[in-house]
Length: 309
Image 1 (cartoon, one colour):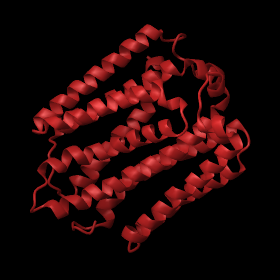
Image 2 (tube, one colour):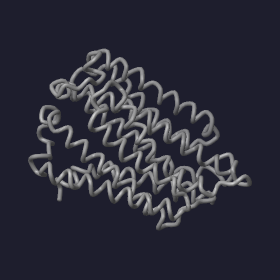
Image 3 (tube, helix red, strand yellow):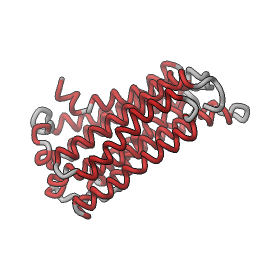
Image 4 (tube, one colour):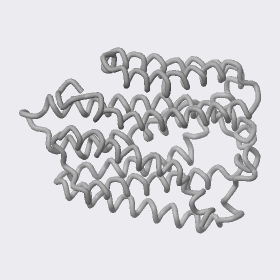
């Protein structure tokens, strides 16, 4: 079973589950927002998201066999521990389950058109793995948008269907806050994707890809990654100054667990030379993403029920 769990990137899937659970129960439900999803509906949403993400991870591994053989030979699963045919079967199975669950969920809440979101995610993950991953920034941007969507989709399905004129202002406060978190996820993942491209440049080059470090060179790509790394720092500082400046607990958490690691990662990018440096930086950004998600636990303690959340 271990190869299977490694293939679907179970740790990443757990992070998605934690993020969606915190958005639903530590944020929306705690502040008694007008929500659409019952517990069963929310389970459908989580399972649909996780299934599509698992399918995306599988197809990514299938198309990455050549590059991973060079970059990460000890972590190649397709063709060694799992056959390509079995991997494709799993890819189709997870996609079908995810889309069916998405259709059922959309029907349950009376928003059949929302079903197209799951179809879009499924198609986008395939296009990313099969083509866009090997292009300059387009693949990085697309996969970062999909990471952001894994957060925003909870607000789309839980808040929007019950939004009416009378509660619109109240609902938008919470939707906007999750949108801020989605932007944060997009920025963090975008920097991490560029870092990973630099880390994997040797295998990507031999596979005929045209990623940023291949087209511009590793040194220039590192400078671009350094510049991009400054954006989430500025964004988080703006978020703190706008929403959290009155609360010592929130400011302390964001300074210690978000800003400090972001600055550390930026400094490491500036001095990165070896592949192990880029691997370390990538891990730091993954940790920052997780700590950012955990900050949702702060809201029940630092804010009272109001439209100024």
